[in-house]
Image 1 (cartoon, one colour):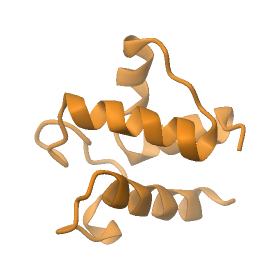
Image 2 (tube, helix red, strand yellow):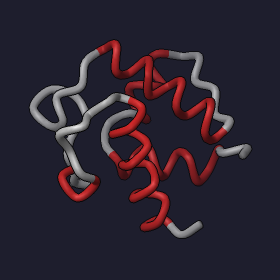
Image 3 (cartoon, rainbow, N blue to C red):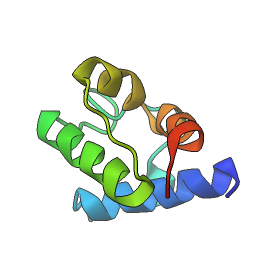
Image 4 (tube, helix red, strand yellow):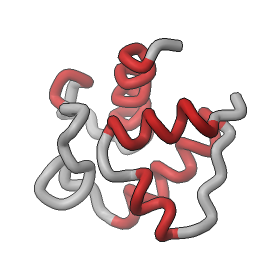
Length: 87
């Protein structure tokens, strides 16, 4: 799967998985932060994203420091998925 397609797929999954019904995939910019001033996600959402990565891509994140580096924005998540996916 091409990176552009993966980004769109991931945005749709985030919207569905986190029940962000007021958003469309195009509302999420690839470089915008997922937490804080960006998309406004919180620590509970980060756990949900870790479950999403495991369920959809076979990626297990055990170290919270690693998770903080991965869950920065769509670009960092897609880069990590492309390098580490098992599904």
